[in-house]
Length: 242
Image (cartoon, rainbow, N blue to C red; front, side, top):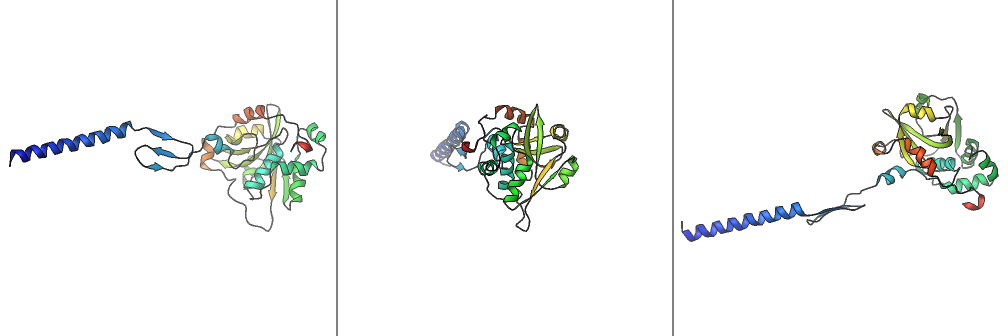
């Protein structure tokens, strides 16, 4: 073989491998940037991958209470909106109840009662049922979300019992969002085994939006409820404050 040809082939191979080496080095040095809505690669492609914060995950499918003493209306808004697909805001529930109830009486008793919530849902054509002395097994057997009263460090509060998965109770808390806790922890704060359920007759079945999801189990546990209760705004609940 001609020596010129050998030299040419050798030079071409050297250039080829140097080019490959530069590409690899560039790839290793290329920054990977992540934004809230997508993952972007600086090497040319762009991978659109939804990215959500833990706050967005825990507040999904939960109506956040906006006033002191409004956890009951926040819980009911969550139930109607995300379980039955009936978009009823917390403000609409509060306005309707306060139309028939003195705000000072509401404050004196520490918020809306389950009777207030019952009257509201019945005015919307739903059926409401309240139970006391339930066991956790009986609450689970209802196979429907239930508004339950809890007492945490002296605070009375309403949350939604969404279900039990494995050894975790899943709750929708209007002051915090979705949270989980061990069954024993839930039973310690659950008041008198009370459960309040809302039924809708002769209509389309409710959605599965309130059923426990895999993402619920990567969230902070129930101790976060106590911290969130301490941070709730103390905006007075009045007819004119909605």
